[in-house]
Image (tube, each protein chain N blue to C red):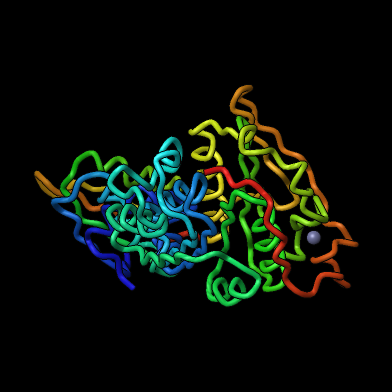
Amino acid sequence: MEFTEAQLQRYSRHIILPEVGGKGQKKLLNAKVFIVGAGGLGCPVGYYLTAAGIGTIAIIDNDNVELSNLQRQIAHSVNTLGMPKVESAKRTFEALNPDVKIVAIKDKITKDNILDLIKDYDIVVDGSDNFPTRYLVNDACVMLGKPLVSGAILRFEGQVTTILPREGHCYRCLFEEPPPPGLVPSCQEAGVLGVLPGVIGALQATEVIKLILGRGDILKNELLIYNALKTSFRKVRVKRNPDCPVCSDFPRIKELIDYTEGYCAIR
Amino acid sequence: MQVDKRINIKGLVCPYTFVKAKLAIEDMEIGQVLEILLDYEEASRSIPKSMEDHGHKVLKVEKINDTDWIIQVRKERE
Ligand SMILES: [Zn+2]
């Protein structure tokens, strides 16, 4: 494949980087990334991956755009209120870069559809806002051996980690089971600084691009924690648990689980 | 000097001068020589510097007439 004149201009700042070059840019143009959630994290992840020229980006979300989303979900606007979030995001991303194929999936991700949905993608990005989905996505990626870039945000603090199944830790190596609904912050407690998902989403997009390029260090066996109030980044070493219920050699969890609802999603 | 590939990037300015030169050398084999014809003065200095930063060997930078330069670079690494 040869670059068009427009692509040479659009990606010139990538091409002149020794770590990217024309070859790296072609890898990006051929990559397929699956994003779970078109909310606070999914918007900046999808936005930057679209700008980077990722070939195919799928994004799944079952919600519609509400005014309360616009404080942080930057792919949506007053012009797309009431529209499915994935449709709103698709319009924004396509306006930024028509090279990228955006697959918008308005649906809930469940144990019955997830394996089929993600199987043809190279990397999965979790931008979901609840524990049942986080565990479902983790388990599905472990079962399929797919790299997963996971992000989470609450109030002023966010986390990022990159899961390479069986090569490094997985989410259940850290926390075997989701916390019971009562221990999760209630809606009234679950505020979030609007810019926080922008920082965390940009970090997730960076991890995805480095995975595709095969360059640099990634957050394998590490959890990066950003505190917006303190303006601090800290890395916590994490280890693969040899008795992990899902990624160990003799897993107890061999089928996907839809944990019951009762968790509050931040709208 | 044997030249394996020639490109003419007259009329281009930075950074596209280097974008074109870099893409050309990426597609070549180690040890092969690329010859670049250009007419943008700044690039006659920046391309040799960037090629060396990327680990290649600049063999020649020559002003051949009032407007044009020729640069020869040997590919040293992927
Ligand atoms: Zn594990």
